[in-house]
Image 1 (tube, helix red, strand yellow):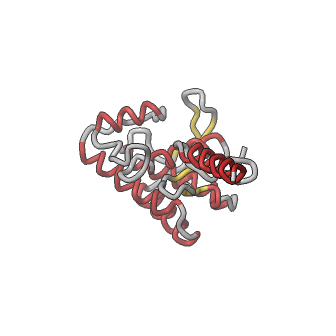
Image 2 (cartoon, rainbow, N blue to C red):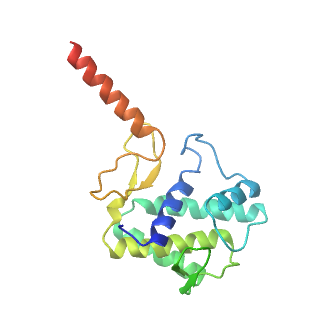
Image 3 (cartoon, rainbow, N blue to C red):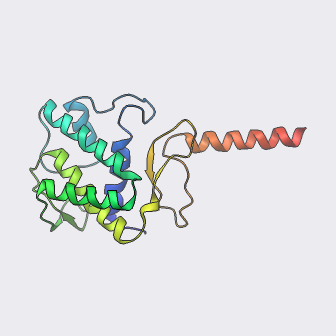
Amino acid sequence: MVFTHDTDLVLRHAAALVNTAPGHGSSELEDLPDVPAVLAWMDAWQWSGGRPDGPGEVGALHRVRARIERMWTAPLAEQVTEVNALLADAGATPRLVEHDGQGWHVHATDDDAPFAERVAVELAMAMVDVIRADERARLAVCSADDCDDVYVDLSRNRSRKFCDGTCGTRANVAAYRARRAAAGS
């Protein structure tokens, strides 16, 4: 395991969140356009705490998502600046918690803080671990020519090249067909 369970989960969640933006994911559309979609998203990722109840909170989540996307592969100095800004903006106060069978982990916002703020702070706390462990290379963008989705490479040897979509399968099929065509000529 590269990261603790909670850091691993938050990084995977952050990548999936970025991939809900227009131009990402299989739909390439906005996957979180309204409160019901965000609530379903929260349920799918088992987010606890307060629930968004209006379009303003959806807009705030979109702004946080854009900050996460910009930070994903930014240079170290920019990542550090953004992590510190996300923590300061929320007045983060880390504390140990245990709930929902997740074991001990860190929360740094109140459970009833706005969802976008909780997402921002959780990601900032995970990025602290990433930066301190010098594992920034594990935050990557899909290598497929037609895909800009982001992912977390949790492989042992940092060998992953494609997102969670079908990009890896398509690349493998194309390579197989190219080998067969070369062998047949």
